[in-house]
Length: 388
Image (cartoon, rainbow, N blue to C red; front, side, top):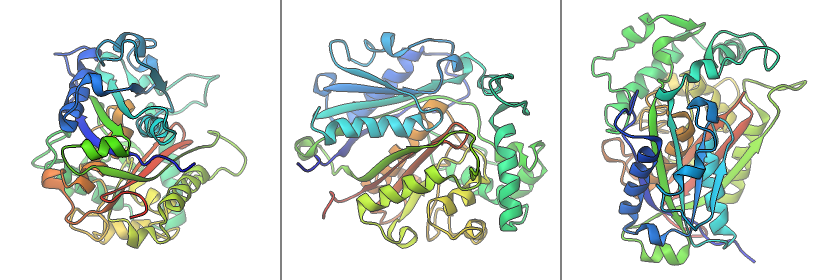
């Protein structure tokens, strides 16, 4: 039996900020979910099941929040499924929801992901002591900076690439009303003069700590036919993982990332991603990861990704726009960041991305990764249903 086609008919997100003191976790997720329902022109009664995703519970200190969020999400008496794959969890949440529809378990599913970093300290939550991991500088940057240095040595990239990417994403964020960082006076010189946090990652080449939530309404072919506007169709989706550490692991270009992208392309019939994909929302928490992921996902040959960033190919008006919304560099509610990438991809092919819309976008990739570059989730969405 063939899989049921999956369509995105509702998209909602909150404004991402440093601290949402005005709402609880329940209020935050309901705000995003209500906007997604309104976009789909449906009600809570039209949802068959809810899939919730978030980062580790100790990021907020609320254990198993999915239990008390059921009421806020209209899920009392309905199936609720919690997903957790570290920073890639937002992407995994969308894929689990999509699989429930593709398998014809449910007709319409609400996928919600969120984070309220202001209620805990994710920096120190990511700095677990021995024996859980080796001693590092504080936060995720302490883990990933050596991998960036390895990329620079391997590729011969000039040390300006990180600043160029950050400058591009900060300018893109000015066109996105939901982005956390709106730095109207940003310049390349200011980014390059910002403090060095984890060599070679500077302060302005780093993502913020954000509160925010995102939600999608996913449905089957019948639901898409009832939708008030053309949906985004899922053309391919996959998750892959690998251990944090193992002999021969390539931290610069993880095998799980390459395999995940290859499976998405196989499902979507993509043979040349550089030419057949119009834009990409990549999970780039530190600016150097844009060229690294361009290579990992097959948009550039090994060692060549930085040349696309340097040449302006990934600019909003470039040949392959990347992180049109400003990306994770400009809004990072960790548990939701992956779902935001998936949602922004869907907005693009629906023509609803506002000032950061890519003209004529028909196929757009959404990408998320998490943990020690060990969890990957990706989907490709299009303006036409699969097989068209």
